[in-house]
Length: 257
Ligand SMILES: Nc1ncnc2c1ncn2[C@@H]1O[C@H](COP(=O)(O)OP(=O)(O)OP(=O)(O)O)[C@@H](O)[C@H]1O
Image 1 (cartoon, protein in one colour):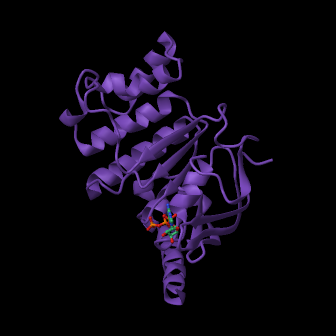
Image 2 (image 1 turned 30 degrees about the horizontal axis):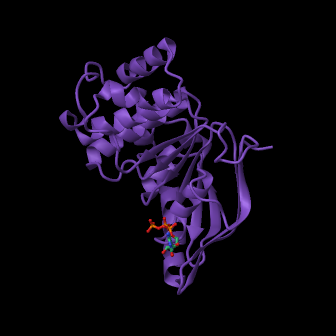
């Protein structure tokens, strides 16, 4: 059985006046250690899919299993990186990083040391006693990554974590997140509007279609690109070919809609 399975998922939002079929008949699997991106036109259900995968909402029909368990079960450890870093402004960087462990009653000396050494690994030595407002947006997102990894999640859900950053910081952070997730052999699902980001970071890309949201096509990133860091992927011919392919497919979906 795969690490994560999505079986016949449908999801509708009901309001007193209308019903929106956000997702229809979604099926896919993710293997342990895979990096998957969800892309598609606005309103195709990417955020809804991520909310279902992470157990924030239950699908109207069908189910998701992570390591054989429902995502909202106590034993399924999930990490998030979002567009905003959601660090607590009144807590120091060290307190922010250790908060998850503290809340889960898992703050051992060993885990504390590990989390603080990860902060150094990603180039943030010496910020432990500073407050979030003293750091740049890119630095704060790096702290958010450490905070997420501190709880040793089985899977990470990344909801446009680079979209609020300037272009140069975004490219640097893509490399850093990629390196860190590979080093710790983490499984990850990224939602992004940026096809280049999806190709350069992922093993596979799931293209969704809108109204209702369906899984339209799955693209496998060529093996030769998967071995490279995201920044280096962007200069390869195979990258441009796949970019064109996904771009054309997206355009045809938008024209159909
Ligand atoms: N809480 C909600 N109540 C009612 N309808 C909703 C709700 N959340 C999302 N929708 C609708 O469900 C559909 C899918 O929305 P969703 O946000 O998942 O798409 P998306 O692909 O993430 O969009 P975007 O790329 O614009 O962020 C859309 O038609 C949206 O209007």
